[in-house]
Image (cartoon, rainbow, N blue to C red; front, side, top):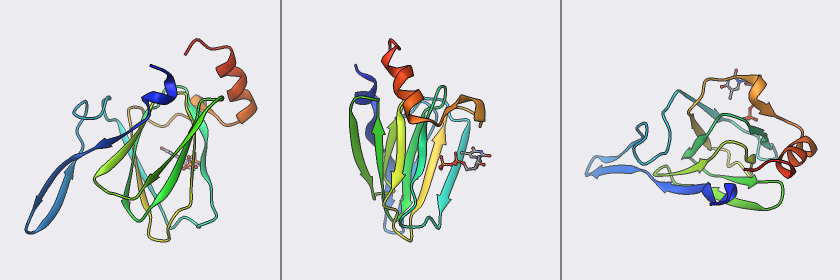
Length: 139
Ligand code: TYD
């Protein structure tokens, strides 16, 4: 399977009753990794673009807990855009895909869940370097 086709929307485990909704995310249960870290962004300016990097080790599940945003993923040759606007659906992004988040609604709270602790050394932040790495990689 190509790297970019491994990125996919995942229907999360939902429990709804007359009180409302509860969504569960567990390590290796519906998502393909062990959870080590989560972080979230909010109050993002509608014109802001976040991300703009690839990670050598980190995989992610992104969930728009409220509001909406768009996520572009790119393998250096092909790109795909996903709209996240449902707190019951997550976008899985494997390591080594370039990603950009944009078109944030004012109420967007975007949760990121990852298999790795933060390590600035594993980031590739220059797009041309990323393309060169991907052109010579066997991924
Ligand atoms: P940044 O990588 O620019 O965020 P995004 O990918 O959403 O555009 O990170 C912003 C700042 O937060 C930067 O100083 C690094 C820091 N940071 C951490 O300390 N730990 C983390 O887990 C993350 C994701 C970022």
